[in-house]
Image (cartoon, rainbow, N blue to C red; front, side, top):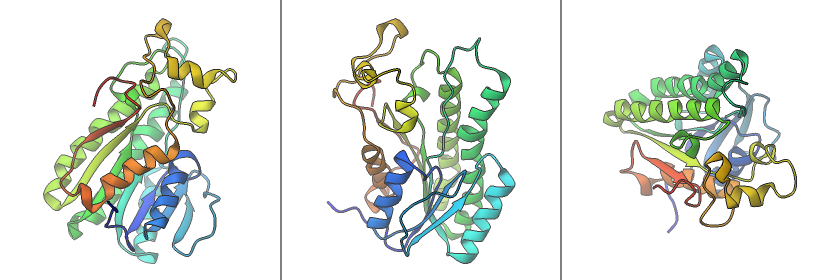
Length: 253
C-alpha cells in the first residue's frame, strides 16, 4: 500500500536537523511534499527544490508566529505540522535545578503549544490539515532519573489530544507518536560505553525499566514511517490517537 496525500502538501517540521526529524524530512520529500525544515539553527540538509530551511526557537512564541506567517506568504498554505523538536534532561528530582526544568518544558511543552496554536489559526479557516506531535513512551510510564523529560512529554501528549478534540470539527486531525529508545544522539548521549545499546534492550531492574521485547532499538526511520502514516489519507479517520512505537517496551498499545 502506498501512502497518499503528500503531493505538493506543505509540511512544517520542527527539530529537523537530525535523528527523527531528518529522517522525516527525507520521507516527506520522497513522497512529494514541500517541506519547511526548522531547528534552533537552520538545518544543514541536502539542497532540494522543495525544501526550505529556517532557524526557529520553538520556545519563542513571537518567532513561531512570525515564521508561520512568512511560510504562508512565501511558500503557500501549511497542510502538515510535525513537532519533533525536543531536549532531554536526566537526573533525579533533587538534582534538577529550576533552569533545567524550565528549559525542558520551554522546548518540549511550550514549543508544541506555540507551533500548534499558530498552525490552528491558519488551518482552521481552511478546514483541513494534520498535526503530529512526537512525544515519548516516557509520557505514559514513569522513568527513574527522567522526571522533567517525562512530565514535559506527558503534558505535550495531553495538550495534543485536547487540541485534537477542538480541531476535529474543522477537519483537522491531531495525533501523537510515542517513540521508545531510538538510535539518535539523544539516546546515545546517555550511554557510558559500547554496551549501552545492549543494556537498553535488556532493561534495568534496578531502575524498574523493562527491556525491549523486539530485542532491538528503533531507527529514526521507524518513527518517521509511523508519522507518515498518521499524516496520510490512509489515516483519514484517526484523530487524538497516541501510537507507541517502542518495540513493546512499555507493554501497552
